Image (tube, rainbow, N blue to C red; front, top):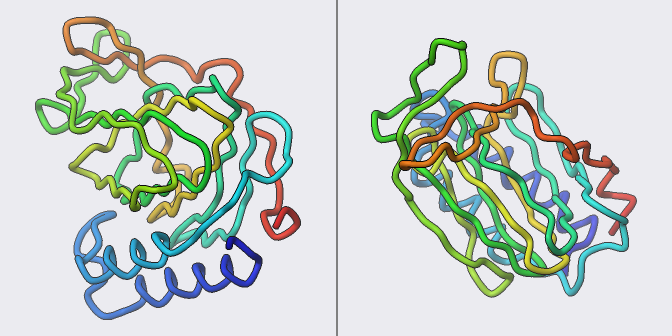
Length: 204
């Protein structure tokens, strides 16, 4: 079950995994040992049903400015995160309740270009496209694999994320729209993404 104690234990596992010698092998790139330790802990977490928090919400579990974010996203049925990136980050994702479609993309050229309007753009290939639920293990995206993704909830869903390192002023999230022809173009942050934020410890 997902309890305050289990969340604190997850935070401890993440801290220990990231502080181990050789855990960080590049900008936002983790050793296989660190990936296994965090994934294994997340795989063991169970949640019978999402907390009774209305609407699109984020439950903050832990935040370390320079190291990681841990949180639970709550998505009502039909809600969607548009395509967005995670620059220089490794992100662990585990669906705890509900059912979501997660579509991960890779840039054909390894990174987007900048168009005449100063917006990021580039061709993509689909790295994965799957329906995820609580029966499936943790997925991991990296700076070079599946780094752009979009998520659509098919049911009221809860998604546990560990983000290493967290977004900050230098690692900003960019949003994208499919321009056709397997090409993405950067867009402004879509309306309706103002998530209500809560302390996770008050919700479990």
